[in-house]
Every structure is written in structure tokens, then in C-alpha cells.
Image (cartoon, rainbow, N blue to C red):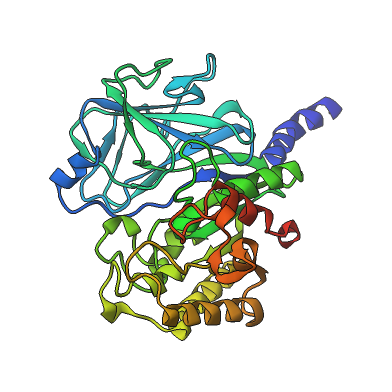
Length: 407
């Protein structure tokens, strides 16, 4: 009788152990719409046929079980994935021996992704260290236009002929600097783990940081969290050129406005408990520069949009932190800076710091500004365009975040 009872308990104990683990994002990126036409897509290297895409990503938290999410966001036709593999990356388009894993979708080797849809792979067992590189290989057997595109990856990925998803290296590989059809890699973690979303524009995306070096400020944050023993995956939901209120202006790569993408890029992500929002500088700068002057907004307009994000995050139980807007006087982009826009930036920052609407504040402005000229980035932190930080500036930003916010 006793043996029977013990045997009956084993499945229950196993189920309890499984229930104590959950998915968090170890890497992710936000998509923008497709370019205007096939010629433009081909010019960007974003049309594929009988080719393998080997895309390189950098993890935040480690795990022994991961899954991959593929995206046809903003796509207009169904995308056929003929096969998919995941492995640890050693260098360039080469993988670490013994780490290759075939990805399946509901037990099948291939999958069709409908327009604007996302699919998730079955979990695979693989020791994935924190701060390591993964290679996700996708075989595209038919003529396919890229979708789910994150244009400014600051990371080199590779395209080779035929089905090379399980190959140790991809020969004759072309290089691209976008992530395509790839939304996220999720890691299975203990119940106390969670996802942090860094939601912003090019400064969150890491524009002008060293390519392939993972020097964006969310990368620095992820490394600090790992060192502190805090099981928090970091999802970089920055899109270059993004705005809170208006659309992509003259450049589709800038993505839809923050209010429109907040559900997909933040609220729908697994086990999000924290979000850091750094948006608004492009709302000020683009008008009269890369966007019509008629799209000019006031500080109150931007603050109103940020209040909407706060309300929607709180409805989902997410703690949301406001990041101050960094200096941009002297930027090389014509019409982007004016003294009037600087007044609005300071008004937005004053509200972020003292408005008591956010659950906490990350003062990036203070972290990178020049103490002798507070309207400008410190020269040592400037990438050279007087808008985007360089590697040292991004490091200073990542180190300026108080980890107590996440306790």
C-alpha cells in the first residue's frame, strides 16, 4: 500500500517541479514594418529563396532549456520555414560542436507563419550560459520577403545557399545587419525570475555602439543583474527613430509609434515585471527635420503619451520606470535641435523626475551630460553625432541604473 502511494506521488511531484519554472526573455528585439517595395527590400538584402538565415543573438540570462519565437510581424504573405536549428555560436557563422539542436513546432520540422503572426518552437534542452552568443538558423525554401524585421541590429548575421540549418559553418555567407523573422529567445527559469523590458528608441537600440560587441546600455544592465545574482532577463525593445506619438515619418525603419507597439513589445512578452521607458527625444527632434514641421509636439503632448504607457503597464501589474532624455545640442542632424526643443526636453525630464507618475526614475540625462555644458553629451561619452552616446556613454547609462529598482 505504501509503495503504491509513493508511486502515485511521483507524477504529482514532477508536475510541481515543472510548475515552479517559467519562461522569461533572454534575448528579444522589436519589429518594424516592411520597406515600401520589393526592389527596396532586395537592396537591403531582405528577400530570400532557397537560403539559410543564420542569425546571431546575445543572451542575458542562462538556462538549460530554451525556445525560439519567430515573427511574421507586418508581413503581408504567409512565410514558410522549411527547417530551423539553434546552437551556441563560436565565431562568425560557425557553431560550437555538439550544441546543435533541431527546432520543432508542435513536433513538426517546418511551419507556415501567417501574416502578422508569431509562432513559438517546442522547448529544447541546451546549456546556454548568460552573456553567450546563440545562432538561430532558418531555412527559407521559397521566395520570401523579410518580415518581423529589426533593422538596426548592431549585430552581423549571415545568409547562405540551400538548407544549411544543421551545418557547422555556412559557406559563401553574405552578411546582413538586421534580424529577420526572429522575435525572441526565451529561457526557462525558476519561479522568482522575470523579464525586464528596455523600451525606447535608437539610444536604447544601441545606435553607433560598436557592432558585434554588445555594448548597448541594456547589455550592461543585463551583465550587472547577472553579477548581482538577479534572475532577470533583459529584452531590448528599442527601435531607432521611434516616437511616442507619431508614426515612422519618412523612414519605415523607425517603426510604428510607441503607443501602437506597446502591447506587442511589452505587455505580450512572457513574465514581464519591469519596464524602463526612454522615449520622446524623437518626438521633439524629428519634426522639422526628418518629419514635417506639422508633427511638432509640446512637452505636455509627450507627457500625455507616457502617462498612457504607465496606465497600461499598471493594468498588467508591471512596474514601469521613466528614463530622462539625454542631451542633444549640437547634433549633426539638420533641424533636429532647436533652443525651443531643448526647453521641451527639460520640461519632460522635470516631469519624469518629479511628477511621481513612474514607479521609479533612471536619470540617463545626469549620467551622460557634460557638467560644464548640460545641454550637451560629455565628449568622452559622445559617439560623434552629439545625439547618440558611444560605447563609453552606453556603459555609463547601464551603470547608472539602481538595481534596487528590481527588488
